[in-house]
Image (cartoon, rainbow, N blue to C red; front, side, top):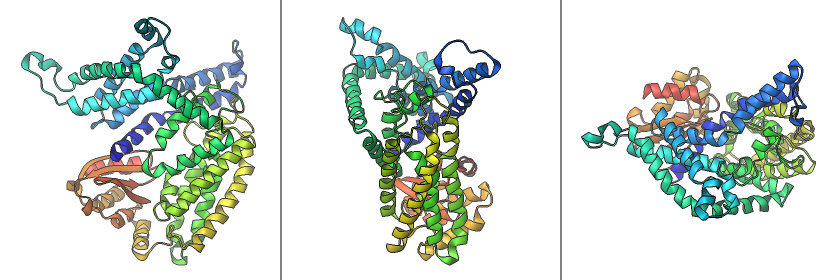
Length: 482
């Protein structure tokens, strides 16, 4: 079950990867046309161009639920091709038709439950994708009798998906109002806590990263699952000034300043003979966190070496988020809380004191550095550069062994026990996700000599190799070797 949710979490990143371009387009648009949300006709070349860019970005933001239906279907399918995407769209259309307020009101002979006004959301998109992928994985090789042979195999997937979606829609007819109202109640209870609620959310967000379940939590607060839509409302400028953005703002000081400062502390705490080895890892991961908001390379660098420190990091993130929201500061991101998103979101109508994040972040950075350095030294934590000898040797091997993606992939494959031991291979933003036949053949230390940040095993046959933002290129080479 855990492996299934890990795969679902990975597939969610495929549609989420569309968000940065939407953020850039809308950020540039608001810079050129800051009055575009006031209505009226745009006049002048800059206003016209700005409005055009804002609407282009909104075309992506406003249709995220459809992108989830397609992206999840493709991401969870056993093969990357168009049939599961088609199946996901089929399921989406069935739900949107059978659970629309107009059709439900006909069925009940009166006014539909208000929950059905929110049926076009990311949760339904994800469910559509799951159904499409499941039907593809199960029925894409089905053989029918000769007189139905035309509908055999992949042609049967969309048909089966439609039938199953009808059954699921019938179940949702009774379940969706309960589920939706429950999610709304959860969201309202967190909202009622104000800044404290934002801090609790940020703490749980970081705490769930090791098992990949933070995506489920994000769906409630960032998208239109429970009506909060912190991310989509911020970029569409349809939220409430001073409120919308509170579940994104608090990550900026941590990702731009706190984590890089923690990396500096880990570097200073490394053993003298190993500082040169870990410098490249920590420096590149820190810059990645600051500039793009991609934090996994740095988090996985100490997550399993010092789990207690990671829990402390999650607590500090929650406290930072609560303080940021109290000040008040409001900023948003389309991808993650790095400098790029801060720059492009600062001109949006719902941004509030966004550049105050920089002085706050400098203070947060100092605190993170001091706390990390004291805790690492006091408890002798095995952060990068302080590992036992076998792990240190693996890190030293990485310094001269990851010159090319080809060699990187070759070393990873050797550590996995050879290609005969690999059943499947895919990747998300920072990790290679694999399924192996015999987990006892997996050599973590050997894999780390490739330059990998870490290796985790979420279930018996599942292996994840933490690479970083260059994971796509390493995975491509690994697939060639397979």
